[in-house]
Length: 130
Image 1 (cartoon, one colour):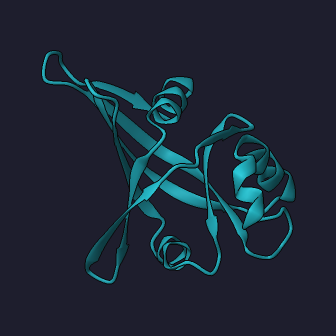
Image 2: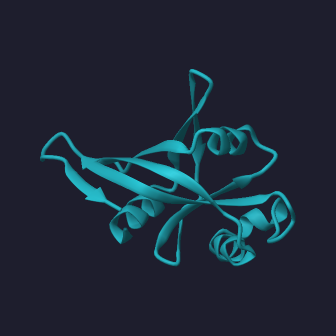
């Protein structure tokens, strides 16, 4: 889990894929946190991405660090605790201009039942299950 977290954190930006009906939706994301041993991401409840995840919690993340890329497939489960929101916003204080713990909009999703594949052009893929 730490390896996935560190990889995504160092990349800064990763791309989150969801679905809307039969249409894939991909957008850049930048929040990744480890809360109680689980990878978590953050968004706003008013955003389309929130509705898409709640309707179909299967997501995929992709990021590239210049020499390797990671693909993370997981189930995104809503984490409703204010403590998880506080933990995320402590890690990303710049988001406090838009989000506050317990504001009714801040939303945390924990990634579960997942698999990460780290690949490059020069070595065999590594798989990390969580």
